[in-house]
Image (cartoon, rainbow, N blue to C red; front, side, top):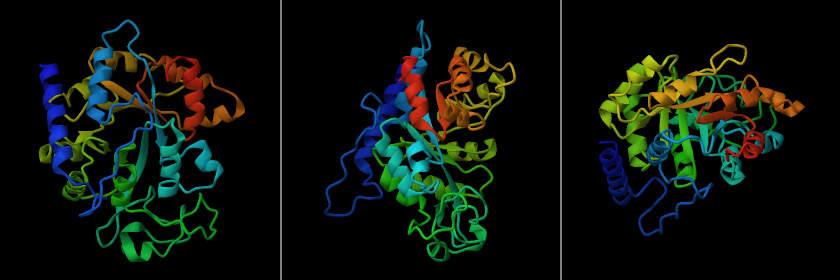
Length: 316
């Protein structure tokens, strides 16, 4: 049954790719040729997920740990003072050759345009002060994005989600964090479908919303947060739920969670955001614990450093 499901999904993806022109393709123009940052990476997320689950039956299930750039941050992007959640820092992640997926945050403007912004307010990452929900898209476009509180004129503008899809199409997987950000389910689902990004995007939110996406289109990939294997198994009825996020506390004995999830046929994703700055001081013991936990995806602000370390472990 698993093989039949995989074949059906592959056929659906092929039909979808042929039938959808994508956001960036205009009539009379040649479509962009899809590129892969990592040559061995499958072109769609579900193919990758099925391959990883098949590997779980092996003696050494993990051949690779996948790296997610938190808010599209990389060490190079941070050093260049590029703003988080900007097209400019996303481009750096794409060109890095070590980022497998970016994580970005989405919010609607007052007039319903989906833009990238982590905080409810634009104050931390732009030279503005208001909440996104109180500003029209035109008003937000008058702002300059900044790295944290630099407040310098950069010319970098808050991107729309559609612009992000256009930039990443065929090049980068995307984790959309919409948790508690008031993103209309129908609007986001329609945009993903319209842009032909169903096979490149997954959605992180609360369970109630994730179930809605599956009811609209079971091919939309959802990314739940769970704390137990039992909670993950509650999603087994939803075909879009295969990769689950969890929290690994460095000072607590939760090392076996990813292995237990593997035994249940589930993939895992965690972040090291509370610890990855230690790598800047040459301390990789925190990262090593995450490696030992056998998680499948690691989210970080320093993708290049995580890649180099994982490569020494034979996991890249």
